[in-house]
Length: 472
Image 1: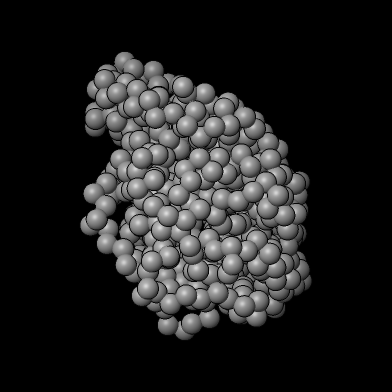
Image 2: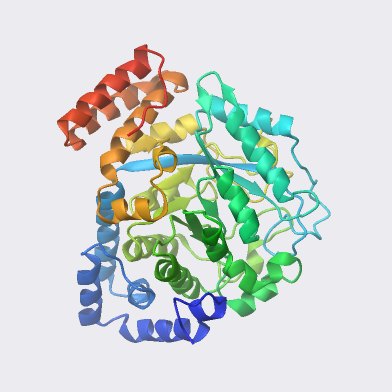
């Protein structure tokens, strides 16, 4: 029986409730009155529940779909402005004991070389990332208690935070590792991580068990309940995600929104981020085996409807997607993207992009500098800000500010200052020229004159005084 306040996976992700919601959506996908009522509620920017949002996703009226896309863009700008946060994944190890049928790291894959970085190799990877200009990493590793125990992850986090190279520093490490215990989540919290990220892969239990035939990850309930244990362990910010294409996209869409509703109901704070990866080619993985793969139009609508349903949540898209697709969904709700990514273990220290240990194929292979210039040419402000994590604006404190639409008072000034750091320390001349203009153009969006004057003073200190890491 559906109960968003339950701590049992099959009660807060209730199969029958999802089927009933999808049935309701089918019955009303052409019902203008119902759709208009949902859109009216959505325009209040307080979000939608999984059933209402499912109606919008199913809507087959062209002019109403245009309204949905337009509203998604408006809500994104209202909450997050024109800022886009940049990050990079850092793969530590591809040793894994799980049998996931969609991932090349699965235990039975004998063609992929198994690599685990030493602390010195991690140091070299981090320096390479710092020399690109990155300040925020997403740490990734396979599940293997012998090769990748929690102690290895914690030691790696300490190494990453300790490295200061020239003007470079990784200011926040987000962590994407396998579901674990409350005790281990406490250790990650004490290590100073930012967001704990874990993709559900699929919310359809029967499909989940078929796709995960062996290994610890095969336990659907333990995996699905991980975010509750993470929050019990003191981690304020958690990030959800599904791998679209494993099961029917409408089922996954309803499931991830129900998970968000569950976190709100139990912990008073929803997901800090939602990621929207799609199944894509990799070693030993043929996407043709996955009949639920979705096209670009469907993908765009999913992004738009998630943005409308959970307006406060950051949305992440990776370099799995092409430049064309990323450009499209930036306008529909995405607020964080990776840039210059390498999805292989040890890939950042290789001059030629390696592909023998990649978890998935990278579609957008541009450099970070090229990505930043591209964003600014579309009038976005690339941001390397990590201030909220380090100022204690996490969990319910962040959400309270975000839902009140006050977080921008901090975010834009911080974004401009971190962008200036990038322009001075790492940018090509062409990118710096575009960036300096973008910074000045965005002064008009800082309404508080006192704050604006402080920002201008600090920008000057960054450019000519050699100072770094200012934040509001």
